[in-house]
Length: 129
Image (cartoon, rainbow, N blue to C red; front, side):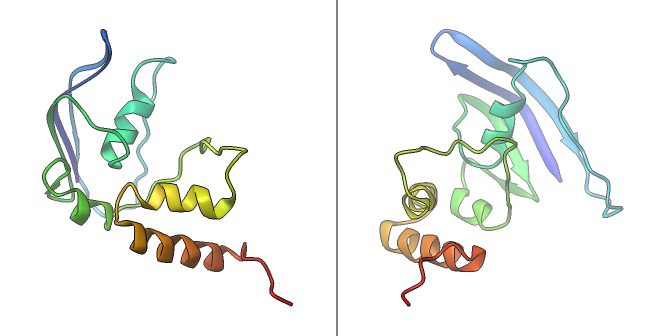
């Protein structure tokens, strides 16, 4: 279940989301939903907010009965998000990038452990042979 009420997000003087309201009920039928709209309509901003990667100015976002703003740590443990084009930085190693992302949601020590786990899970660790 996703419920968004009067969501407002601005970048400087540019209002990207202006009282966005919608809800998607979970009926466990395997349906897949998507956002459609022109470039600059706020699709990516909305997804970044719903996944906890961006803050919003006003409104309310509830995913699986957890309000994002007040319960970020509980919330981020229950979702996954794969963006269409992940923002990879050429000056960062895979570990540095994963560590950076993990630090958005957990303390530095846990982020280090999780980044290493993710590299091992994906087979991207360096062999010591």
